[in-house]
Image (cartoon, rainbow, N blue to C red; front, side, top):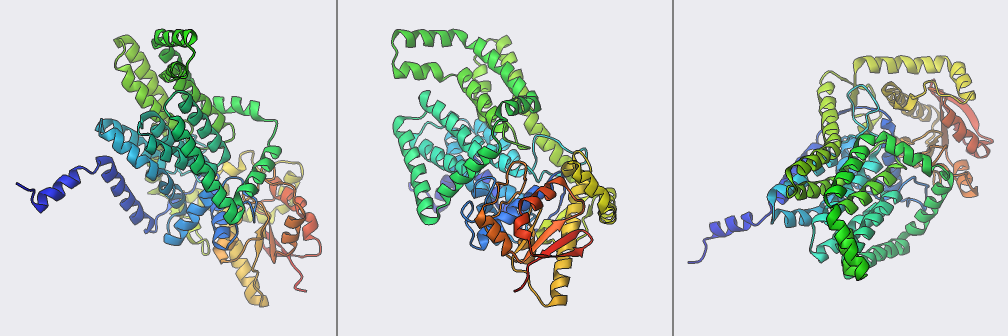
Length: 570
């Protein structure tokens, strides 16, 4: 007897993986939340988020990353944020930047989870739930403030590790070579245009998976061909690829000679995870030592590729490579979700441990938990604390910050920020003297939440002053450049940013010496702003770096916290 229409629909619904249904519900919830006027408690180095505003505004005005402006990372994050701003113009920007990455992570993750779910639904959700925690919550694993707040910095790094999580899930659990080829090509391409160190990290994982026999030769060739095809299309269409490589080489030159110390620094910062991972590696190696020795003997007697792959394709080798890859990636980072991409591998190790003798199984499972749980618990705890803390917070007062101003903080911190802005303005000489000696007003100034609030207040003041000056003098500044780490003004005023100038302008490691093209672009900029609340060493360095392009401009006190360099209309 044929099925009725209702039975057919029910049967079809049952064939939809539960993980796919859960993800669809999450996406619907995200769309609804991005349409609401949400606020978040501003945290340390929140102004890093403004780099996304700067990059996306340039994209929307027709500029091409690396071709028309120097960027510290790849273009994909800015492109996603630009698309998100177009669709959700009033969304809370940190949530928008965090959640738009789902456009990248879901396409390869959904089929892999469906494959896993067909064999073990619990395993699929054990992969999905941690992924959603890390993907949806704008929090780093590191804590830089004692007050409940969110993390506007480390966005690039979070995005990379979230894509690496998806890639690791595919490499460990996916057996269909076609799906694996798609997942590798997709993730590697995305990582290349997110951050080059993420791309290198993915290359290490994929190379090992190939040597271990998880990735077939044909799959590797197809993935590589797809990646190169995308690069060729982008290069032919915009010249972005070659310009991006040029930017990377400049950044390497600016940061050479520190890699060894950065390995030590990364290991010490994340020792809780890395140290537990090393202990787990030792326990897994001990548990699987006999099997590994037998595989090594087989390979030595008959050195063939299958025997070599069998020697490598074991938990201890995978974990060793993953730990090194995670540590390598963290050498170039300030903030992020370090080592979260270990989770799929740790889950695989935990399941395999159930076949060990009870004492060994307990040891391995304990060390798996010690490695996997701290990042997850830390992110959940800090975000929950931020949401609860925000119930007693007040909105940061502002008039012109648009969605950038969708933030809150403790009333005492906001009051202090208002007071400090006035003090910076009235005691400029004091802070200039501190900067002249090469110091900041506070050793951790940029991580201080009250400084981030002060910066938002000063930015709002600058917009008011610009609009007032334009109205009083009958002019319009079409291009605006602040001698500051970030440039929010093109977004806030719907103007343009000058081409060929670095965004995310940290003169100590991310601003190359200006060439003639850069200096010419600054000379043609209508309004150059110099922030003075407070005067800092970085802003002085930027002013000195571009000094020759500022010659001949008229200097005025635009507001208590901003000096303006005006271009002669003639």
